Structure formats: structure tokens, C-alpha cells
Image 1 (cartoon, rainbow, N blue to C red):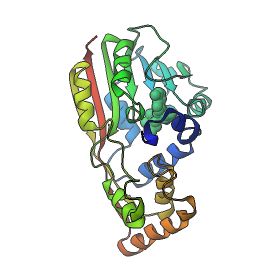
Image 2 (cartoon, rainbow, N blue to C red; image 1 turned 30 degrees about the vertical axis):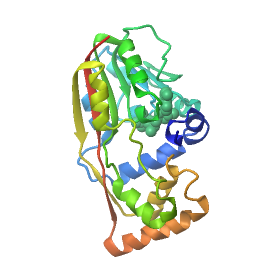
Image 3 (cartoon, rainbow, N blue to C red; image 1 turned 180 degrees about the vertical axis):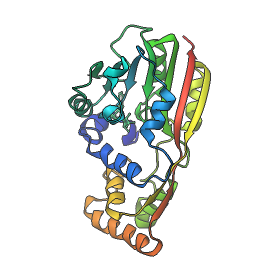
Image 4 (cartoon, protein in one colour; image 1 turned 90 degrees about the horizontal axis):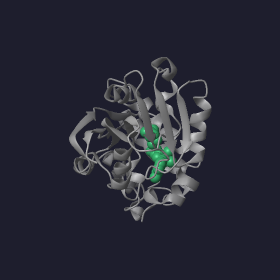
Length: 269
Ligand SMILES: C[S@@+](CC[C@H](N)C(=O)[O-])C[C@H]1O[C@@H](n2cnc3c(N)ncnc32)[C@H](O)[C@@H]1O
């Protein structure tokens, strides 16, 4: 089993603190070529109505809810959860002034709630970490009201392959090191969701990266679970110099993305 599904690695290393996730979010926010903001896109798909109750699996450090949204004013109840205490503690700290938000530490595969209580359950960019994604999706179905919906953001096949190719050129001896997880993609996730929902939809977020700062890209690489421990930390400056030589020549580094949200409606229980 690779790092990406190891509970021990996820809790005690990768997501022990929010710094790895923050390095990745920074790259997408700073160098995304898409027209709109990711969090606005997610909220638009979620379309949360007043009084609706939401349960978020693997919420991370709560970036989605930190700005431009006042849950109290929206009269919603948001239950934000994560496996990592370090991640969800930061969410709780940052959102402590928002009424209607409750943060809890739990595994997506077994949430401490009775069945049929939520209008929406989200699992954004986290199902590829769950050893058995179907178990977490089944848990979402259990938590949802019959009229409820499930939203899972994830990456498509080939997401950021351009970066993988650069890393293979940089460290050919570690060729297998840099691969995005294929355990829950937009493509296979669609098939999985069809086992649990009568109506399933895929909405793509159109965005790529044009990176103009070598150290931001190197920091991104060192934040990944796939490269963790494979490319040695002492090569960080060398990797940044490698990226910089490309930026000097081309003005930036283009990396194609494939990201979006899968939406399941009419849960099959
Ligand atoms: C890539 S981050 C995504 C965070 C946030 N949803 C976002 O989109 O920015 C993945 C998160 O899933 C959490 N996670 C991984 N496995 C989990 C599980 N089995 N149950 C709950 N959370 C989990 C990690 O701790 C981490 O915070």
C-alpha cells in the first residue's frame, strides 16, 4: 500500500499539520489560469439553501469556509470533520466566530451521527485517501436524507501529468515516485457513485497552471505524499534551480490539470 492510503502516514505525517495542504492550495490559487475561484465553484455546485444541514468528510483546515461566506448568516448547520486532529483543530480555530459550525475529528467511514440527518454530505479531495472509498460513500448515503445530495471533488486521470514528467526528468532513478493516486478519480468515481445514487453528474472545473515561481513549485512537490521520502529533502534547492532554468527560458511552466466535482442525488439505501 502506498503512503496515500496509509492511516498512520496521513495522521502522523502528511496531515499532522496543515502546512502540506497549504503549499498545494497556494500553488493552485496563485497560478491557476481558470476564470473563477475554486471555492466559489464548489459553493455554486453545493447550492446550500437556508436551514440545510451539511456534513463534510475530510474537510481539512476549513479553507472552503474561511472567507466570503458567513454560515451563521446563512442559517445553516455545518458539521466539518477530518481524520486529523491537527487539520480540524485549525479549522475550528479559524471558524470559531461563525455560528452554526461544529468541527469534529472522525474517520469518514464511520461518522458519529444517526442515519438520515443531512441535506448534503461532501468529501472533497479526500476519497483517494480512504482505503475503501465505497465504504465512505456508503456512510454518506447512510447520513443523507432521501432528498439529500453527495458531492465529491477529485482529480481526473492525467491530472498534472506534466509535473510528473518534469520530476522523472529531474530524478529518473525514482521514476515510479511521482504518480497521482488513481484510487478515486473523476472517471472511476463516477462509476462508484452510480452504485450508491440513482442520479450522478460530473462537473469539470476548467483550470490549468502557469507557474512563474520555482520555489513555490518545489514546495508543492515536497508537500506531496507521493514524493515524500523519495526525492531527498537536500535536493530541494536543486529542484528549484531545475524549475527556474525552465522559467528563465519559457517565462513559466505550464501544467495541465483535470479537476472537478461528482454529484450524487437520490441515494440508494
Ligand atoms: C487533500 S486534503 C483535502 C482537504 C479539503 N477537503 C480540501 O478540499 O481542501 C485531504 C484531507 O482528508 C483527510 N482524510 C484522509 N483520510 C480520511 C478519512 N479516512 N476520514 C476523514 N478524513 C480523512 C486528511 O486528513 C486531509 O485533511
